[in-house]
Amino acid sequence: MPYDSIDELPEAVQKVLPKHAQDIYKEAFNSAFQQYRSPQDRRGDESREQAAHKVAWAAVKDKYTKGDDDRWHPKK
Image 1 (tube, helix red, strand yellow):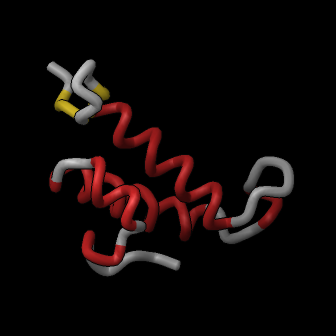
Image 2 (cartoon, rainbow, N blue to C red; image 1 turned 120 degrees about the vertical axis):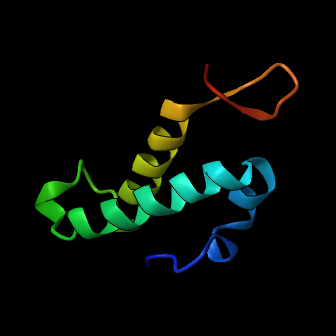
C-alpha cells in the first residue's frame, strides 16, 4: 500500500533513516508500487510490496551511505 506521509513508513525505516532519506524512500516506494502492479513485471514470487521496498532501499542507497557509526549519511 502506498504511503501518504513518512509517518506511515515502517518503524524500522523511520528509526534508521534521516528525514530526507525517508522522503526518498516514500516516493520511490509509491512509484514502484504503481509500476509493479502486474505480477509479470516482478521477479519470481515476490509481492508488489516486496518489490516496492527493494526499489525504495535502492533509491536511498543511491543518495545515502551507511557510515561506520551505523547512521545513514548523504553521499558526497
